[in-house]
Length: 314
Image (spheres, rainbow, N blue to C red):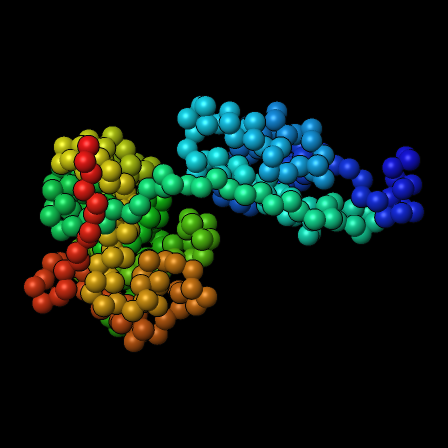
């Protein structure tokens, strides 16, 4: 009661614990696709900083939690994600969340500096020879999915969730495209998937195999591509470091090597660009298809992608 009177008379902000702020964050972000991961990290943070008042919380308050995470062998990226959540909550408390007196929960948000992530893995675009070796070792259904990925730049989740009712016929160009709803796309924007002749052939080969999903195995949609089949295949050819996401990097690098413009690369890779990427004229769509065609196969008439890699001395 006394604290409330002070707030009313002097404009003093009532003290709130981090636990209360975290609960408000969770309630306001029910739409967020990564909310379950955020909640998991918040639960890990609460025993360490849950009872600390948000106006007393700073980067130093989290050192014990950071040290504990490091001892458990957690990746720097995972620790930084926890720091980002705390930073986001404190920024909201200082900029958007207001009490009944119109005051923000915090006057100023403290700086929450992230750990330097020197171990962050660099992309590994495949050479044509590496692609051939890897794809030969993959189970047939995974090889088809990988071939589709390296010719469209789609992510694992977009490919696994790809559905027939997302297909849009383009009769004037004698082809199809897919429009992936934003809820299945990382940046939450609808994603236009342009098909070059190889990607289109993969789609046609799959047609009729499953009622709803383009890619299925033994009658069920494939949940993810980075499975035991992928891991076994990359191990056989000495490419243990190659992830499914590197297929997207391979597509992007080949587009660049072929001289495809930055804007067209953005659209083909599904990057957020400020343009409405699911509304194109026939001429614009034809241009994107031509750009995607430029990476269909290795050709002596096109500049080959040269990948420079540091040789390990292990």
